[in-house]
Length: 433
Image 1: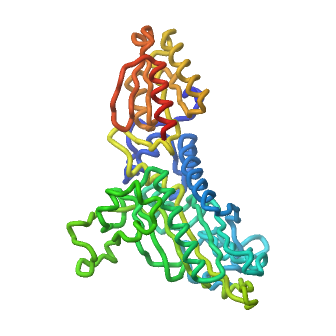
Image 2: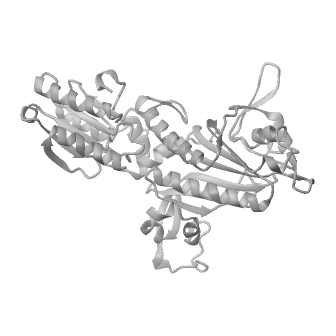
Image 3: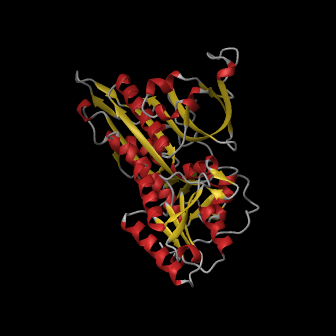
């Protein structure tokens, strides 16, 4: 993408209304703009990141054998009356009537809708197990939306729903989803700490929250230091993960803690995922029964599993930034490489910059060519701000010698080299990842 043809409305100063770093950097880098309280427009840079996060979530759901579908954002209140949640969910639910005076709501979650689908479509244990998921916009009318996407009212969510014939199968599915979550967060460049949690409005008896460590998190976490040491191994070893101690401040009791206080890390965390097993909480009142192997009608055992896709974008920024801006993990970066042409009026600069740009594009690498007339200092500030993992900087003097500077955004290391070698360095790094 040529920067002159892109839409990148960066701000020179941090917005006064932003209280956390992710909100400030998303506004400053031109990723989002506020539309109303807790509701945001996603601008081109932001939507590229959002789609990258969404695709990683989808990849791990599909790889686990889960089935994608899409349910409506607007739901009939009748289903929520049937489940008993319409009057108990709280003011976070946005309710309204259509022109025929039917009660509707903007879905905060989809247990009722999914249960309604399966009760009309499944009759036998042979139809189970199944896990359906969707990636869909949700709305919860937070009393005090704040911190940008960290606590907004409209958000993109991956919500999944499991269906099993008995409790044993339901627990097995729950553990499969647990593993899929750990792999997802690892692929996003995040260390996730799973904690046993309350089930809240969803209900049930088994639940875990997933938190990523960030100084601006709202929860205080107490967890085994082995999480930090073994993070590369955690994504594929469920028994290891579950053997490690982790608790929120509310649940941590020093007197009953199974490990020594010296072995604990105490950090702030941001919740990015929550999983529940709630048995027949919805299937019984909504009459979602199937025949088991003995021909007896039994309620479907269910669970639900959420990941805050749009919240993850903010969480990644909270974890990965410096005084100059965002430092994206390669997997979610909107552009993997920024090619910075320091003088668009110099023919050597143009020839080298466009050669680099075209070579990278030919390798299907997402690359942004800065072909603007901004001063070099402004260009450097912009590309540090938007966080491309690699920068290839082309100036007149070096271009005349077929040289460029290669900068690693995360480490800040800069190397001068032949521009074709710089291309190969970047390609090799991205292919390894």
